[in-house]
Structures are given as structure tokens and as C-alpha cells.
Image 1 (spheres, rainbow, N blue to C red):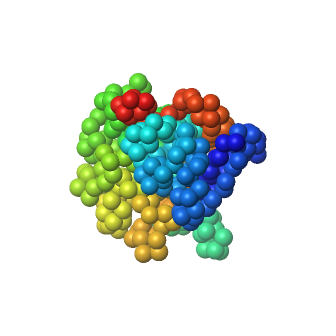
Image 2: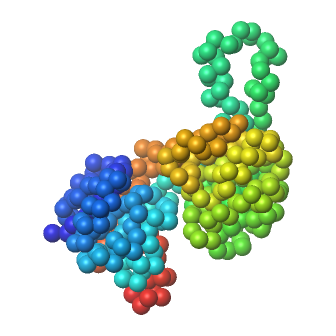
Length: 325
């Protein structure tokens, strides 16, 4: 019987979980059980991981591993080179949470511009004493999305959907980054031009060596005075210290951030005290619909891997070919 490891805790539909259990024996671990993950992986056929580090140690010691499945899209916690050398497909759930993450990006934009959360607290605290709109605090004078230029860094499935939603609000969309200097729908421009020309920048890049630290202090300084940045992909792409400083100085008027270099966010993070920063706990894909989509992809991918096939969403196909697999 095949052995399938859930390397950390994640949400699956009951149907998908039952389908996976039909394929083999399931071992469920927590993110904190690193030593147990190393030992249990030695005779595992499939490892499913959301955040758990599947590194060279695990991959090289796994004698029967036929595939690694990522819950979600980002594969920065998987050693793709080690997996590819051994002929192990690495599969993600690209597109499964695209709508959820894209809608969160838009909601963070709206929150930064309209401050609905602060306004809710204002009403509940009893500070609303006068019904005249002119008596409201000046911070409630928000801005609209319509007419703003939206720059998208990383226009894959999620970034493209952010652009589509932005267009529905009447925004003008430009894109940058990625393997190709073109996009089928939106105008492509270099990264520096996008940063300096956008009213709102949405970061939708994967965390890979080429993108780590991409938005350095110098690049963030290129952004328009009073512009916004929205980050819903992976931490480590943006210099968080520089971002906090630019929020404090007023160079940037707001930031909506769902992902961080260190998660959970440490109590000494400067972002916690930065003004006009809306922080959410990596919840972009946490919708019922995203869970259903991802669950179907994972169950189907596991079945194909057990059958010795490469699932459609295998991310290391080129590397597997390079190493002769």
C-alpha cells in the first residue's frame, strides 16, 4: 500500500481526503514535527506540503518518493533541483486559489483607500457624534479606484485576474516581470517604469532566486509619492524595513500585506507600528471555493503520481528533462 504524508496542517474537502485515503495510508504531521517528517519520508510515496520544508535531506533519503504535491502555488519551500535530479515531479495547484487571492488584493486596495475597518471601529466606539458629513474626521476622506493606474508585478493566473478586476473598477492596467516581455491583454513595461508610473502596485510574483529582494529600498523609492502597494504572493520579495520607513515618512500612503518574510509576523516587525498598513494573516486562498478547487487538484494529482504519470500542474518539467527524466 502506498504511503502518503500530509507534511503540515491544511484544509481539504472530505471528498478529497477520502479519495486520497483510497490511494494509500495517510500520515498527518504538524509543521513543528520536522524530525518525524524526515524519518517518515524515507518510505513515503507522496508528500503533500503547504509550508513544510521539503529539502535535499528529505528528498535524498526518500527511497520510494514518486511525487511532491504543494498545497497552493508557491514552491519556494521545495528543493526543485534535488527533486528533479531524482526524477521526482513537483506539482502545485496553480489557478486553484487565483480568484480568492485576486479578490483579497482588491479588498486590500479598497481598505487602504476607504478605511472601512477603522470607520467601523469609529462607529462602535461611540465617536460618531454628528450626522453631518463635514464633521467626520479628515482621514475618512478616501479615494476611488476608478481612473487609477494599477501596476501588476507578476501577471500569471492571479496577477491577470487582479488586472481584470481592476479594469472592472475603471482602472488602467500595466504589467511587468515574468519570463516574457509581453502579455496577451495588458501593456508590459519594465519594472522600474511600472513602479514610477503606477498609483497602486500589486505584487503577485512567486518567491524564486530571481525575485527574492526584488523590491529593494532603491526600487521602492521609485514609487510615486502617495501611491499604494499590495502584497499577496510571498514574503521575501519586498524589503519590509524599507517599506515600513516609507509608510512612516508618508512617501507611500498605504500598504495591504497578506504575506511576510517571517510568518507569523514577529512582534518586533516594524510593519506592526507603520501607519496605514493593513495586515492580514496569509489568508488569500482561504475561501471555500479555493479549498474545493485545490482539494480536487491535489486528489487528482496524487492519483496520477501513484500511477506513475506526471500531473498537468507539474512545475519542474523542464528540470526533469534536463536531468534526463
